[in-house]
Image (cartoon, rainbow, N blue to C red; front, side):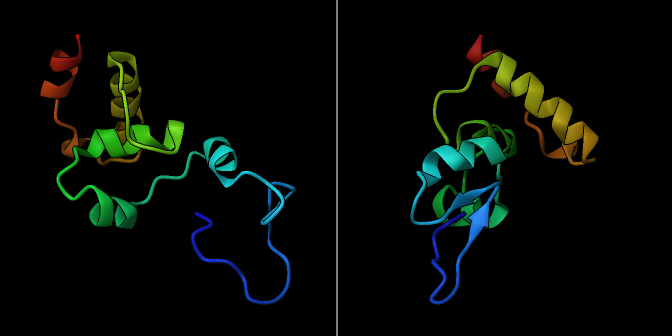
Length: 92
């Protein structure tokens, strides 16, 4: 996630060097989702909102389409039992 910096050497991700690139923009191209980040920052957040956070690299405004995509991804990874279907109805 780029929250800890190397003390020696050089770190590159997808051809971008840490310290020379905007990590917020780089995170968006990776689609990183972290359960440990969720536990620290948003302990009561719905699982599908954390999945959607990978799209934008933050938790924010979420559309019904985002939630449907999250449900599809969660099915792919066999964790859709964590999906709360009420959230789709609330965004419409």
